[in-house]
Amino acid sequence: MNTPTALRSADDANAEARASALLNPRFYTTDFAAMDRIDVEPLRADWEALLAEFEGDNNHDHFQRDARFAAEVAEHEPAWPAELRQEFLAFLVSSLTSEFSGCVLYNEIAKRVANPDIKRLMRYMARDESRHAGFLNQSLKDFGLGVDLGELKRRKAYTFFKPKYIFYATYLSEKIGYARYITIFRQLERHPERRFHPIFRWFERWCNDEFRHGEAFALLLRANPRLLRGANTLWIRFFLLAVYATMYVRDHQRPALNAAFGLGATEYDHEVFRITNEISKQVFPLSLDIDHPAFAAGMERLAATAASLEAAKARGGLVGGWRRLTGAATGIATLVRLFLLPVRRHALPPQVRVAPAW
Ligand SMILES: [Fe+2]
Ligand SMILES: [Fe+2]
Image (spheres, rainbow, N blue to C red):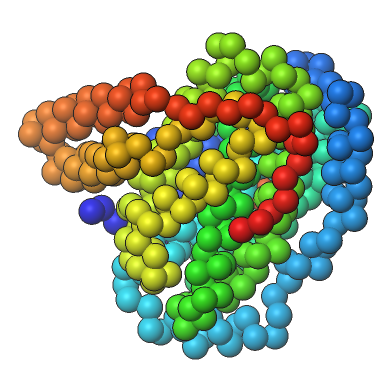
């Protein structure tokens, strides 16, 4: 099993946040003129109710440290094994990068579109993601690993996605973000002795922001049902698989972190798949059959292939190069097989909104 990049200085943390490796969180840009044409009229009442929730801003006072925070860090940190320390810091950097990725994208859309509905929504979501990224960065600064967000915004590579791909990808990343945060929170609620850093106490109200962001994309997609039909269902399948597989491989590179939670990476990821599958029925007419034995086996194979690719990279030379080539071929073949597994199809419910019930 490989270990994440060692983060010894702020330069390391900044380089890691900027890196464009396959599994690292990306920054996105889109076609703003096409985004402008998105219409929410068919779901106007739901839309206004959701925007009123954003305006109410029930988490406006949440992302501030309390009096116990510093003492809890000081109490737990000396007991962290070296692997946990590295994996936890890498987790903070990748969480910060994905939170800030949302912030940059939503801000850019808010600035560049004229459509007043989209503009309002994006402003609220950028506000939330900016708080999330800032809160994570404070914890990195405790270790001298603060990320320069202005610099990250200027220097990181951007991936272009058409609006519909932005909708599929961000809908899923918001909902999977909710599922990840709530699963960790619930586990540590049951086992407070495993809470090795105070930031996890913030995850419950935090994940409600992510849930609400996902609701906004659910409404945008359901108000434009052509995005959920025909050939687009293949794109939905693709994004479900890409998001699930990326998470699975990345989490399996952090065994010490998951062990510290008392949740194996496999158990944790399957719980996150289950929650995300359940929620995403509000908008996607299909879900991946996560109970199919070939699904779990394929995910395992992907994680093992990623580990051997890392080992081949470290080995270098001709043998390393050959193993990287065969490893990449195995990875692609496994993804194709996973993509071709039968899916579960369902009718979309009349009511789009769902409640966070996990
Ligand atoms: Fe967030
Ligand atoms: Fe979010």
